[in-house]
Amino acid sequence: MRSNILIAAAAAFPLITTGAVAHGTSADHHASNQEVTETTADHHAVEAGDLKIAHPRVRAMLPGQPSGGGYMVIENTGSDNDRLLTLTSPRAGKVEVHTMEMNNDVMVMRPVKGGLTIPAGETVTLEPGGLHVMFMQVEKGFQEGESIPLTLEFEKAGKVDLELTAGPARGSASDTGHSH
Image (tube, rainbow, N blue to C red; front, top):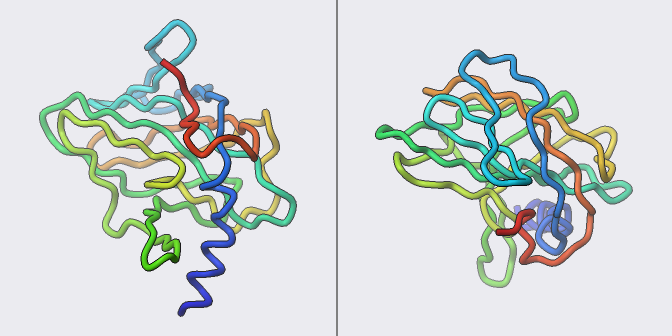
């Protein structure tokens, strides 16, 4: 068990020690409840139902790295909670939302069970060192500058198709991929 945690920690180490600076926007708008709106002069958000999803991005992967991290900000402007139920991507065999925390000097990463709740009137940030999207069983690593397709399925907002832009594999740990 401890070796599994250490293996997961080694695979995730690039996720917590590097940053991403690229921004993604949704190029595909297949869902009828999904649209892109401009939120600042240089950023776009995807809207689905009461949710606004901004700053979708991944980090480029290092050679031989079997998994990669994805990040975004999800704002629920509604009066009811919503829940992220599933994530899929043709670039990964498995995609999950993971938590990351230190436990007795060991980094522990675990999937979020039962879906990720997006509380009414609140914002959930998926970022390096905390909640994040984990792309696993990746056959071809993400390369800086390319777009990685990701479909999110929410309990109320339905399916949302995103394109996550791959930023550099290395950067500062405090870099959340956007500036204000």
